[in-house]
Length: 466
Image (tube, rainbow, N blue to C red; front, side):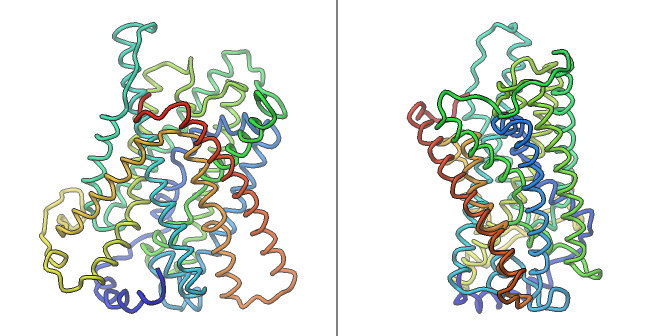
C-alpha cells in the first residue's frame, strides 16, 4: 500500500493494458453505479427518516446526495494524472491517491478502502440472508397459517449465498460481468418500486394521514434518541457510498470521449435516480408506519400481499448477488497483484486453465488455481464475520461512518487541491470546511454505531438467527 510496491505493480501494467478491454459507456457506468449505490441501504431509509423526522430526514437525504455527487466529480478528475484528460491512467483508487498524495495517505486510503469494501460485502451477505429467510418464513405462513411459529435460521441460507459468490468470483473483473450489473440494476429498481408501492398502499389503507412526528420517533431516553439519530445518519451515508469503486468503474470506460466527462454524467444520472428513490421510499415508509417504521422496510408487519413482498425480496437477493461482486472484484485484484509481485516465480501462481462460459462475450475465461483459492478464502472470511455480527442497522451505520469521510470526502478533496494546485484562499477554506464538517459527522456516527453493536452483542451472542 505504499510507493515501494509501485515498481512491482508497473511490471504487470503492460500485460494488463493488453488484456483489459475498455468498452464501457455512460450507461454501463450508470448501471455499475446504481448497482453499487442502491443496495441494503435503501431498506433502512424509512427507519432513518423516522428517527430524524419529517424535516431533517429528507434534508439529510438531499444533503448527502449533493456532497456525494460533488466529490464524485472531483474523484473522476483524479482517474488520470497529472492532467484529468491527457494524464496517465490510475487503475484503482489507491493508484489515484499515490499519484497525488503522500505515502502515508496512500496507506490510510488502502486501509479505509479495502476495509469498507470488505465490510460492505459483510453487510450485503447479512441483507441477502434476511431476505432469503423472509421468503422462507412467508412460505411457512402460507402452508401453516398466519399464526404458525416460523422461526428461520439464516446459517444455511447465508452459506448458500456465499457458494453463489464463490462461483461468480471466478470472473476476472468488472468488465467481464457487465451483464450481471445490468441485471442487478434492473432488480434494484424493481424492489425499490415494489417497496415504494407497498408503503404507499399501506399509507392509503390507513386513511392517508401522515404518520410520525416532525421531530422524529421518540425514544426511551435522550441518550437512546441521540444514538438512533446518529445511526440514521450512518445508514444514509452508507446508502450513498460508492466512491471506493468509482475509479475501478471509470477504468472500464472507452475513450474518447474523456473518461472523466463520461463518469461525471454517469454519476449525475446514477446519484440523481437513486436520490429520487431514496426520498420517496424513506418518506413513504415513514408516512405508512410512523415511528414504528422497521429497520428493514420489507420486514414490516402487515406489509403485503405476501407474494409481492416475496418478489421484492427475490429482486433484492438478485441485486445483492451482483452488487457483492462490484465491491469484491477490487479486493480480489489487489490481493492477486500483491501475491504475483511477492512470489513472481511460483509455479502455483503462474498456472492457468481456460474454461468455457456461455454468458461471456468471449465464450471462455482463464481460471488460475491460486485465484480460485484466494477468492474462496476471502468469501469464506466474509461469511464468518457476517455470522458473528448479524445486526443490520448497526453494521450499515458503522460502514457509513467509516467510509463516508475518508473515501467520499477527504481524499477526493485532497487530490483536487493537489491536482489544481489550489493555494490558501476562499476556495481552499471552503473545501477544508466541507471536509471538517463531514469528519465530525462520521466520528459521531461511528460512536453511535459501535455503541449499538456493543449493546446488541450483550443481548445476543448466538450465530445468525432470525
